[in-house]
Length: 252
Image 1: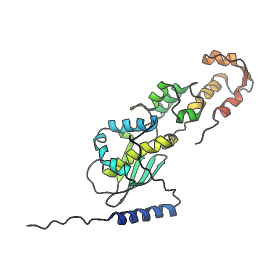
Image 2 (image 1 turned 135 degrees about the vertical axis):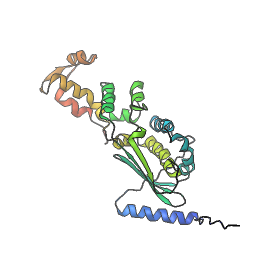
Image 3 (image 1 turned 90 degrees about the vertical axis):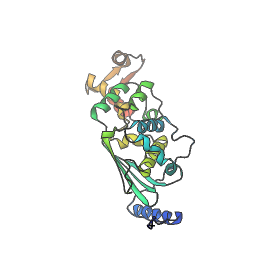
Image 4 (image 1 turned 120 degrees about the horizontal axis):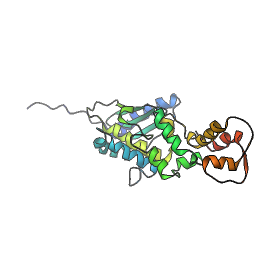
């Protein structure tokens, strides 16, 4: 009978030690370590996290592999997950410690312009955007599968150091869960990730006003503004201040 060469069993303590060594190397490079762990009864809890979860479930050749990453996402195996402009970098502990990288293209200009146009005059602050406290049609547009902020299959790539042959290994699946969990708590990272600024959704109406009236510094009656935007006000505003005031509260 032929002898079977099983892979060497690696104790949990050894895996953790290897993970800590990789994390220490990142710290020495100035990286702030950001572990992620799904803790709730559901995989996501807010509009942003749930929107991401629904999105990845619909992705061809990816959705069916997602359950493989649930245990990793819940048991603390995602030791580091950082969302950066154009990419996500993560360390996931499995049999070994694996680096997973997800690279993402910026939002298409036409898509972002459509979102901004829809937000014209409807968003009061950046915090309203982050809290999802915006008109339903705006959030529906932002989360739209084909023309929203989440990347299409042609707009991202996933890479893992492991040797699994499946299109989506356990470690890749884990960080897809982890991204949703991170967006639950830090929705502003979605805009950073896709290369756009949430404050553009607030200031776009002021920019439109400037474009229609020019850059002249004069007092504009709110009746005139109301004629343009279909609203009624009873004071006066200086249009030179509009852009600056509307950006207050942006944390990006």
